[in-house]
Length: 242
Ligand code: GLP
Image (cartoon, rainbow, N blue to C red; front, side, top):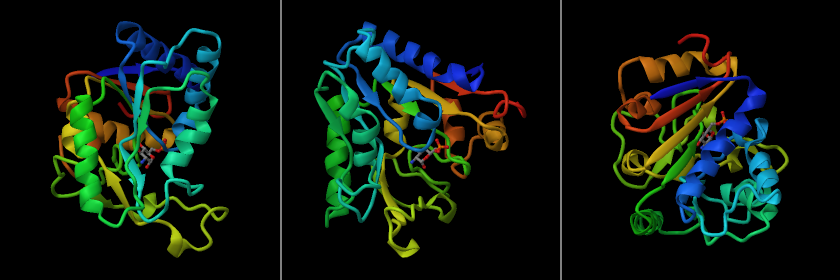
């Protein structure tokens, strides 16, 4: 793994540089996306939008794919990851990308949806370039800590601490989804390049545990130690215990 430590204001440009290099080498790349707060907090998507506007990034041939989605809300729900991607990135791009795949957490047959998404992943031959965040409990995508991690796409219970809650869009805590559809380990390991961003002092412990401790399914991000091409983007706070 390659660690890069920078100021938070440098994160967006560093990631955009990596994306630009990827798209230059392979304009029809399959780009794995992430949700969470980091893409917004560090201006990651904004920088892509700005560079596309300036003609420095071209998404026309690219395919987007998101690794997870909340279960029990429709794709057009204000809190769905589909809506998040639409509002934060897709609707701001001038060129319409070829496709944007996100699991559908509203279907009745979740098992069938998992298999459908696996087929999408296989047809695309997995991500060429995968942006990732890091959950405080060591989750990646929505692969939560567990005794065993499924290989293919599956339904995961969200840890209580990770249940997103917005009083604006959910009327009561009970409405907040407690499960997600998430990619399994195969899609993580078969991504050709992974760029993981974890910034902020509150991530210092999990960064050290995940990337310098033993590999364990109890800290899913630790499995990335076995991946051949991972770049970990940190700031001074998150890197302070390495
Ligand atoms: C959510 C996403 C994860 C992401 C995590 C990190 O739980 N499902 O894929 O890694 O958020 O969140 P943040 O960037 O807010 O720290």
